[in-house]
Image 1 (cartoon, rainbow, N blue to C red):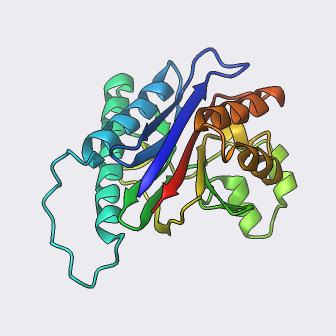
Image 2 (cartoon, helix red, strand yellow):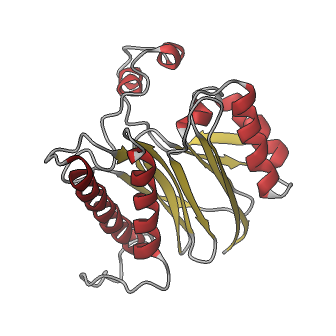
Length: 259
């Protein structure tokens, strides 16, 4: 599979520091966005730890951990999903250890990070998500949200207790119930994504999705499909800043040029 990718992160209009981080490595097939949480610059440490751990454990040059050999009838994505799960748990442990070191606490209140990402695996990707950073797929002219926000308001939307419009303005819209660093083990959503030539994937922090809707994202991505991906990333960042996003903004674009 031939891939192209690019990423940009921007501090934004309000924040003094940037707690987001990203990884876009076509050689290793690793594409991630992480949004850090925590005071005293701890958020940016948490997101950096997440990216460093994923790169170290999932790089194609890294030694694979010892585990049971997959059976011949295992699905094409199973090994990639297992490796991703192990890397997520290690990233979670690294953030918890750093939190205890910095804040002297046995709980996970000091720092944490969301993570959303794609790992290239045989016929496509394995998708991982924990928190409220998002993954989208533009295929043909249709935009699909691949991830599910682990936020209080979106849980209420899924239960029919709140509309998506109400969720956008709720004072609890940034309260999340899953993230790296929140518990001794992290519960992430992991699923396969079969790829097609021409697919365009967007990974982003909520600094983008807080101020744009899916229609706007689809228009920008459609316009950027044939342009250099760096230009597409810039268009997305500029759209968030023009709409006065109050958060850091990070985007990664991944395009499947050929299978």
